[in-house]
Length: 218
Image: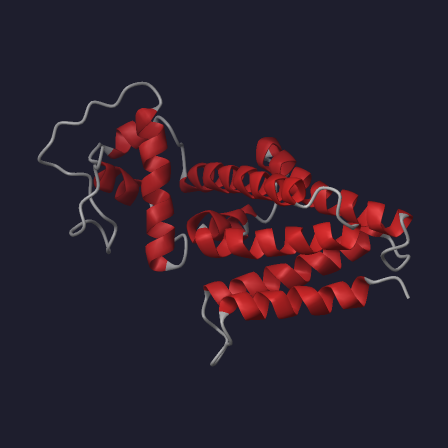
């Protein structure tokens, strides 16, 4: 069911079609609020929304929205958590498609999956690393989702070191280098901060190739 209009809304966010009467069943409003917030992030390039704005676009009172999310922080955390689940699914798919290949090949596949996830799901990606969520101490569920993603990369690096495919260093340190490299490129591409870049596929391939060369066991 198409419920979003192409015009109107708050600062470019599409409004729910007010010509229909939408009855939200249990859980549906919560999902709608999440979708509207993601759309706001994607259109604005930042998480600058308020719960009141999101509620207005969803066609409900702010009181109804607050029954699902007590604050913007809570809504943003939910989006971020879903984002990490999505990234983990992309990682699992990449590893499955490269089963039986070398550890280095699987790590390269993880790097490519990470960048493509960022470009295909910018709303989720920006929420996952938003400054308001830089501390996960009060968000155990989000912290667990993020840790599992990083753990997947650490496991791949650990295996690569054990098989003498990667330089012998701390697995977590090497994994952090991989993460920092692909994360930085992801945001540069997402924010279009690279002047006259080559085709994205070519740039991603070059970056992953150079990263792989630096990690290789001498």
